[in-house]
Image 1: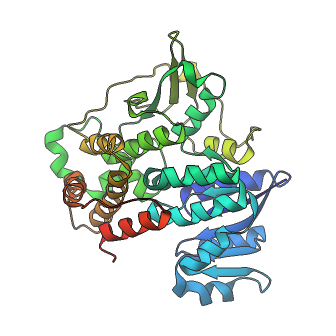
Image 2: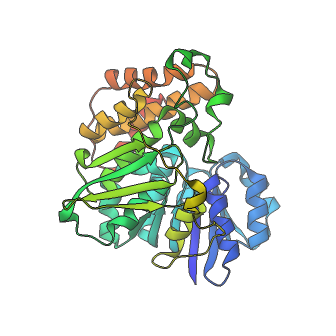
Image 3: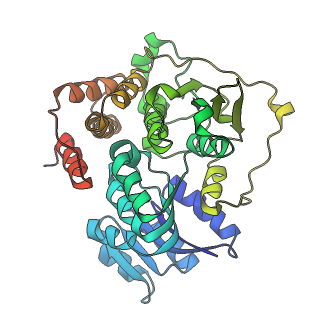
Length: 375
């Protein structure tokens, strides 16, 4: 029986994880839920599964959450409350808070869990060095949850890294892979939020439409697996069946295949090193018949090139890029900029940002806040 905490419990990753946990009450004991601002689903989940510890990031919702839950439930709220909940000891922490808001809770949890199932790629992009160093210090194993990184994690397990030539992660290409570039000016928010293969939250969906998501994942892969930038590649694979590959000096390439369903990598991370049934069908390759691949188009998707350049630069540029991308996402969702202006906003912020010394998590948060104009 593994005790579990979920950071980002009411998001798509959190809800998929809860679906798996419900199917295996003999294997998993969900003890901690952390949500953002949505009280209703948090209350429903906490009551249904008898969760002893519940936290909500929105401090103003503390009283309403407290009153809605049983008296024996411990309730936390606000940034300090989320960190308190992150410091509760569990076997597995699923870190699935979207964006930079997940950095501190993820870092805190490392001292209080045996394994960290990381679904918050922004934490690794911005604070990979600090998070990986602390995980090593604490003896905490990091298991990736993104389908691409879960795939690479699995295919790398059987071979020596000395023989590795490269790893490849795949991208669906998003909703605008075949849209003529001259029609990008007609893209609307509603169009960008319709991903062809994956059901995700709005941030990941928009990042997938710009291919920034794949840029963030290239950075995450390089840091998680301690690879140089030239050993991590991305290709466009519209069917989203192959998620990751590893290529070796003898010409061998190993690939991980599964249907595009996040329950597969989530169940692997929760149950590791054992596999867990999660109601995802086995692949029928005859029915699929064809898998296709193509090179990513940097002209069509400049965000990918921006991320690749930041990986080759340094941590400062990664932090700035990550914050600028979240800022551009918010502007786009608030109808302040057009889809095509997202990479322009990111590039302009990168060009104007003044270098900062980065050593600690506090340094990272301060720079992130500065870029967002929050200090």
